Length: 287
Image 1 (spheres, helix red, strand yellow):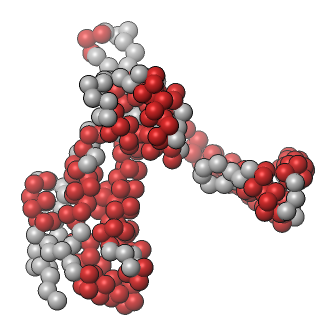
Image 2 (cartoon, one colour):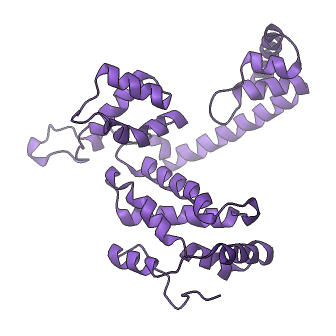
Image 3 (cartoon, one colour):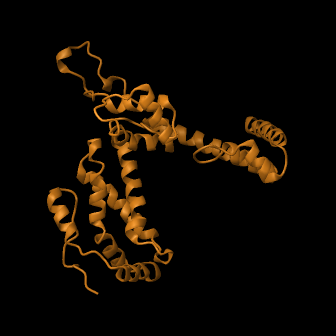
């Protein structure tokens, strides 16, 4: 088994063309070579094997990152973030599942690039739910289906909303945001002393050091109080509250979902929920 390991590890910082040329010089692995390297890494902790898996897939990151150039972010930065996703994929890859690394890694590479775009693009927190993120990353390509259209009509916005599973007004709002012009942070100096630039209202006192410490202390107390209140509930009540209100993302369980789980009526689940929340409020107030 031979690899072009004499080649230096390329860096996306600097000349991007030189990086791409260097990355493309690494040979692609056969399925047998890939499995052997993955087993060496996961069974024996062989870091060199993981390195070879990463290097042989750098061209995949470059290809995926190229598809996100329309968001105005440097290609090199997109590649760097994609490389982080690739390394996460190599760490989690299990060849026993019968899937090639290239297919498995695409998800992790795209996920890392998506996060980078959302954090660093000119719109802060432009999308907060999975559906809105899907809208953010697909609206431009879907608009291409309507040739010669700069702004979607009501009917077209409705069609896009239906295809992506979001509300029509969300499509309209996202389109407005994506097409909005950029503003200089410091404003235009020619406007004089009376000018009011974005930097004047972007100050955020939440990140002042003492405020950060206070907020962390409050959050810790709230989490501890919530944990104690949940612990005081019986298992069924705790399960209902957690499923209805303490889910990490997406929609919580419905009354009917839980009714089916516990083989009772939805009204009974509602009654248990109300009683549990009342008990928790009492405990939190007392704390």
